[in-house]
Length: 330
Ligand code: HEM
Ligand SMILES: *[C@@H]1O[C@H](CO)[C@@H](O)[C@H](O)[C@H]1NC(C)=O
Ligand SMILES: *[C@@H]1O[C@H](CO)[C@@H](O)[C@H](O)[C@H]1NC(C)=O
Ligand SMILES: CC(=O)N[C@H]1CO[C@H](CO)[C@@H](O)[C@@H]1O
Image (cartoon, rainbow, N blue to C red):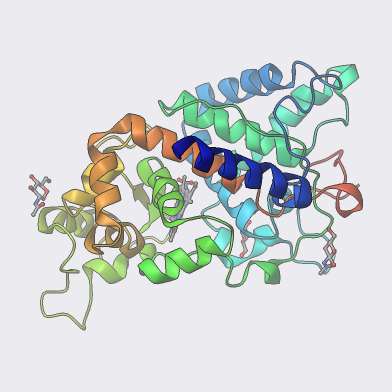
């Protein structure tokens, strides 16, 4: 009986594979550049490692850049386009303010290194370089390494208005997070795993000020926030703080990509509402608790989720091209 069911499942699996090949992530595959630029992964890794030695900011900046790229018009490097003339590109949307220049610079440096190899010149997309660089910064900061799927083309348009409503807000509750991630083909566990990217990097005080200074609440502090943590945040982010001040999002291990993010949530040390709600809401708490104690399981879930994130809105055929300069259309 068991064997029969397995066979039936297998059969329907391969059937849907034949009938709907498009649903199995367009043309992406590992080793896509095996013949056109066989060393591309090591060329990118070397360039990213060099940038990482110059500044740790490379890590969060590149990771967040990848996320924003994929959630706005798909993983097509449209976020890298510079505004020109009258066109305000994606990166000029106010929500980009935190997109640190070092993420853009990482991709531009890696693209330069790839194009310096004559046989690779103009063969590798900026979207794929960003995907590889993101994998590399995660590994360099102590996170898991994983094989990436490649074969994305670079997108043909980039507008600031296309960003509206596409990115999650730090004030989001679980339903809002789930519906936005679901719109990108990502499940609740994927969303929780990806949120752990906040184990590295910085936030400006304005993004969580509502949690430590509220006139609506008797004691000003969000009741789901740890009081000791809130007091520390109030000290680092006094009212009327310089808007350019940014603080570590993981107060314990800000430069290590690890599962401490989940341990922090258990202690009420999630920085944004969207972080802490993953523990407060009983629908997501079991996953937080599981990954707080099992970093292997978290790493596996993160790899799965990043792979799915990398499939969002991929451009192929006439919907894209390989940019010569990542910041401009050819
Ligand atoms: C779940 C919903 C999410 C929300 C509401 C959110 C929101 C934010 C906000 C408000 C900041 C601080 C921006 C600033 O003030 O400069 C931030 C930073 C960051 N986010 Fe998220 N984010 C989410 C998911 C993600 C995902 C899925 C990733 C990547 C996989 C990610 C990666 C990062 C990184 C690495 C930083 C630090 C950036 C830096 O230091 O330059 N975030 N996020
Ligand atoms: C608040 O955070 C401190 C560490 O700063 C921790 O020892 C304490 O247990 C936390 N409180 C709660 C209620 O989780
Ligand atoms: C953006 O480019 C795609 C091709 O990838 C095209 O289908 C779409 O209409 C373009 N959108 C705008 C607003 O130009
Ligand atoms: C990194 C980057 O491109 N930042 C830009 C974000 O958008 C503002 C305008 O909203 C620009 O001034 C920044 O240069």
